[in-house]
Length: 293
Ligand SMILES: [Zn+2]
Image (tube, rainbow, N blue to C red):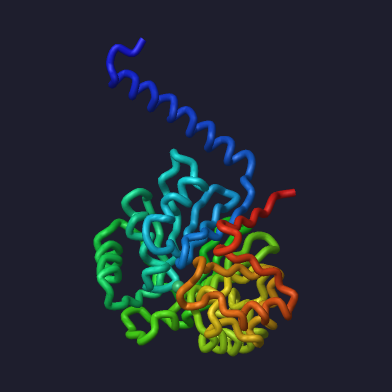
């Protein structure tokens, strides 16, 4: 039937086009479950959000190619598009994978803090976003990215800090709160207790000012806390835990971490507050699925 390879390829393309059309119809008619997958990428950090409308959002990408392997298990082979990537800060264990990702996926939007370090990786990232075809946004409090029952609010930094110098880039971490229906996820990046103190103060300031743009998303209370800085003792204060009041804490850490992450003090605090702890170093990838009624 197939006299030459070209005809076969053409037919296969037609078949696939058909398949896509059906797939799109299917997606429109029936919403998918909303999922957040916290990847086990060793010492790094990476989480994929699969929205009920079929959008893909990646928050950090770990260090290196591991993320590609993880994504291939979660994203169908015919989808090579990621709607939004959020980079919490310019450290290899969060940034590294993005540089491999751009080779294989079409990325539309990038949200980051605009703060670069001095590594060669930082320089490659800067070059990529300066020359690539991306819609780049600098994160700051008050921004909201939304679609139907889903939105992402930027909580930190409070202002545009692009181009600023940071002695410790963890302090520049972008903090976002992801909300789907009545469920919320707080992503802390590698933010420290100092950052948490600022968030606590802003949360208080905003309590009776929800109508103001910068305050509408400034809510700490969340169901799931992606614990800051891989569970180190420099993050996750007791005051902060009281305000966030999560039922589940996710810790992204590598096995036998050389920095001792997560720290026993952090674990003890979470346990004392009766918060369930899930760790990528012990449980591998952690998937949270929210089904529709
Ligand atoms: Zn980190």
